[in-house]
Length: 596
Image (tube, rainbow, N blue to C red; front, side, top):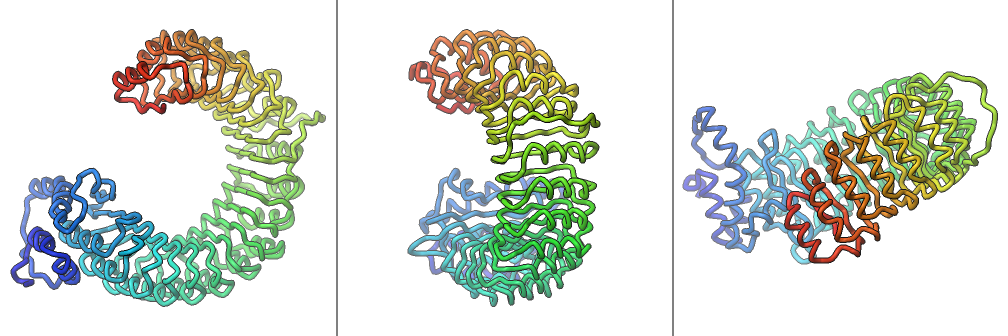
């Protein structure tokens, strides 16, 4: 049979005869089939590459005999496409994830450059993916480089054995909620796939220390590791992995694991090549673990560090981390309830390279700590973001004359109700070179507090988000338009109920570069939209009017005029626009994505 089926097209046609033939052909390795090599000119090869996608669709149409999808759009939805390097990718989700489909994909792609990426999300409840389907992929597509399996309970170690034995070019493995896979399957991958450089293991209850030790020992190219919610993974596994992958691992993420201070000490000693590090929900780690990790002097190359929900991170540990990571540029803290202003300021003083700081749900951080960071990092900090920091109280206090924070370009403050006018006026004095400003959910700020900040931004604002700042008025919006109209690209005014047509008139007159405008739930009328539509220099691409109850169908001509440049329009909950006029908008603005 092998001698008669020399071409890939012949094999695909033969596979459509019956399910038995399909499974039989998919079990034959590519090198076991005698094929005649053809010499093609560059022009012919380019023509062949351009037609690969159509050939794959044709192959799936022939597979309709077996009950596969013969619809071209559905095939595209399965994400079977040509990648830039010439390999194919495929994604099966839910009920489409079966052995028969995997076999069809293996036959259809095996002779067309080979399957480079396979993703299986979910499982068919009655005919789910098993080792048989993975065997077909492994034997027909040895060029597989990426394998991702999420919520696939029917695949065990035997399935990974098949991949490990045939797909020696595998570079990335992603396993999520695969309870039947254990250390044995991971060991097989580690021993047979030396090119593995990225590993993600999430909620795999039978993978533990032995599997991680094997990966560290047999995968010299390992660069990225993510381990989440694996109860069998402990300090021994993390230590074995880090000590073996000392000179290759650059990214490490650990979340919800039963590890303690020993693991952090190992990271601090062996993480010599780490550039990105993230810890989330490590409940057994104490202050000592963070202190030892920072004092280990092994994280000299670390550039990005994120810590979430780790009660062991205290002021002392945070300062030690800053001293032990001289090249740290990005730092993110979430839900670290113990951290106070003292630790934050000490960290800022020791973090000599810090450029980006993000604080979320850190309730002991107050305005004094925040402004001390700005002053301490006045020459290097480029971005700072606060979210849900409830310790802020807008108290007036005397601040000594200090140099401005000239390096800061991006400021984001979200849902910090104590952040008010005094704090904003201080920012206006300290940060003259802001380009991006986000003030979201701050009911305590008014025009009086925001105007000094707007007026002092000498570089010209390009992105402004004032969403849910309910006490701002047209005065602030007009100031933004007048002072920054030649640089402003995005403006978000969602929920600013005192913003009216006067703001739209100012925007229409001054904002020639504005491409994204959101005035949802503002008090604007048809007259305001008419002013926008008459602005010849305005070229909006995204425009949102959601919840603007005063907008009627009289605005449809204005929307049609604006629609010449729009690619996105949101008119949800604009109930005064009739269904007939909505149909007209859909017909005339067919290039625009309209949310109704």
